[in-house]
Picture 1: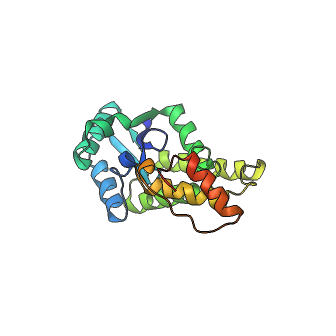
Picture 2: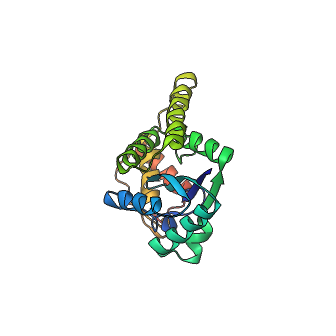
Picture 3: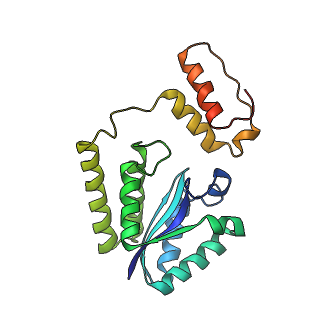
Amino acid sequence: MLLQIFGLNHNTAPVQIRERIIFSGDDVTRALSQLLNLDGIEEVVLLSTCNRTEFYVISNEAGAIMFKNWLQNNQNLDAETQKALFTLQQNDAIKHIFRVACGLDSMVLGEPQILGQLKDAYRQAQQAGSVGSQLSRLFQHTFSVAKKVRSDTKIGNSPVSVAYATVTLANQFFAGFSQHTALLIGAGVTIELVAKHLTSKGIGRM
């Protein structure tokens, strides 16, 4: 059995593709249950946020094929979305989940929200009965690594500016940023920073 990660995120797909594969609420529990019923899949955790949908899976090679077929049929994926999907195995998968938990793989470097989202995903998988000994050890160790990184480094010492966070959030929610118009109200330093960040993100018009 292999540790594998399947999914897409802001590094592999633009928002208009990411928004085609989103799981929330009961959809997560339903997906976990369906995946456990596939041959070759033993354990699954599903993390689905505005920036990423990633499946952390313990399976064999046949299970990986079954998973990809399930995802394609379950989400009616077109060719463009399928190309954006990535697969990581073993050490590469471990390295990736560490980076995700520590905020190193986030759009905003070091942002802490992803760790809480990862913990929520793990708890939901526990409640659904889709976590076994292997993913349990992986996630517990991942949380310990993230805590140590936060304690021993300065990754969380530089808070993200309100202006940057605002523009980043807008960029996540509105597909085709270059096609939109932003109305700015204000005349201070913050609104000036917002204008600069909007320009750097490629806003269509201000």
